Amino acid sequence: VQLQASGGGLVQPGGSLRLSCAASGFTLDYHAIAWFRQAPGKEREAVSCISASDDGSTYVADSVKGRFTISRDNAKNTVYLQMNNLRPGDTAVYYCAAPPAGLSAYGCYPPRYDYWGQGTLVTVSS
Image (cartoon, rainbow, N blue to C red; front, side):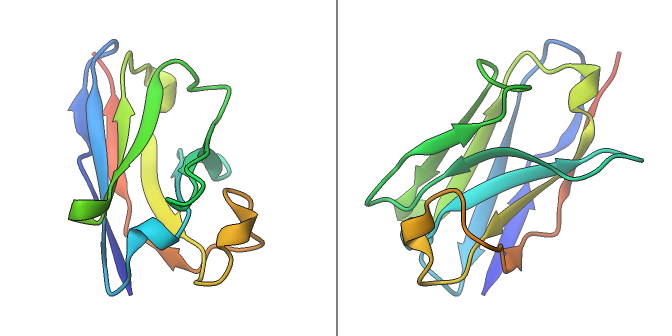
């Protein structure tokens, strides 16, 4: 089971990026997938989550609401995080994560996340 996060980079304030979280070894549509971020010197923060496909509910942190959108493409076994109107405060390493199989009933609030991508760096700076 592996998650591969990609799509980070350097962008100016107000710009956009789309992060991808591709899964191998399991089928994403049976799992909730969450995006977390961690900035230097700060605690890890939950950014957004999408429940398994039979539910499809989403969570978006207040700090990014209206700017970030999470979606999934089951055919590509990939979850995306579209980030618009980026701010310097969004600078962080972004990680995608999935809970173990069997916890889909918890939606975006499972007791733990067992599978983590390697992280992709987003830098928002002029």
